Length: 101
Image 1 (cartoon, rainbow, N blue to C red):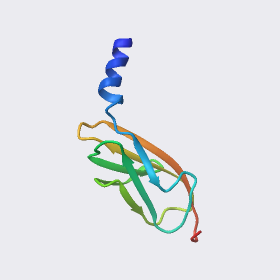
Image 2 (tube, rainbow, N blue to C red):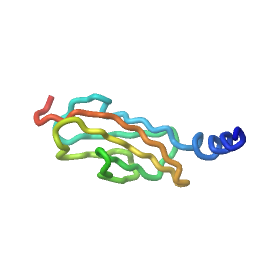
Image 3 (tube, helix red, strand yellow):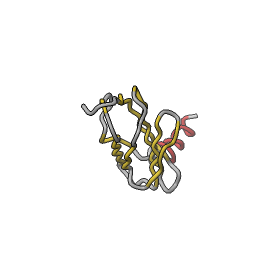
Image 4 (cartoon, rainbow, N blue to C red):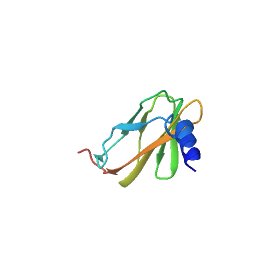
């Protein structure tokens, strides 16, 4: 089993990108269009943004603008996928309100 664990780490876990979400911050209170800025420690071929369990956008930049989010708590998840289909994700919760704060 140790050999298998080492191979999985070497070929799938370690080469996967480490994802961070620069904006918004976890727990942020937001209004209007929500801007999401994701980053990775290595090249990412495509980014996917989910609100709850629904994928709302895929792009190559990691920057997303989401208009008209429902008010209340929302879970935002960003997936970064490499050319080799290795992926990582980062998730945070925000609160969406009807007026700018």
